[in-house]
Length: 79
Image (cartoon, rainbow, N blue to C red; front, side):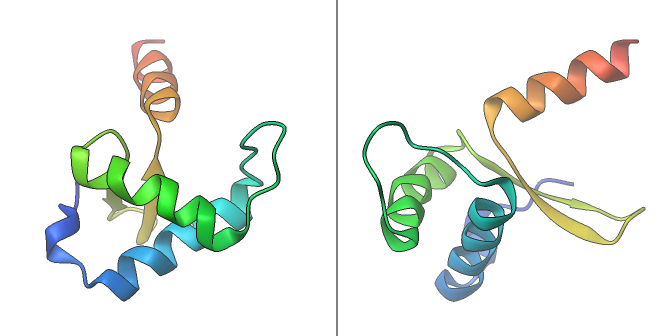
């Protein structure tokens, strides 16, 4: 189930993004960015729908999905 960002408080949304960034070891290229800067770059993408917040009721977990994550899930579902 996709969770619209408007349904979450700003604090919860930022915490989800921080968790995703630290868990995934997200790399933003040659320049070093702080966690706060990385969240600031992802936040507008969430509101544009380019980054999805989803809830999986089977595992009772919330995930942040980037376009490449969504494409990978679609490809594995087709297999």
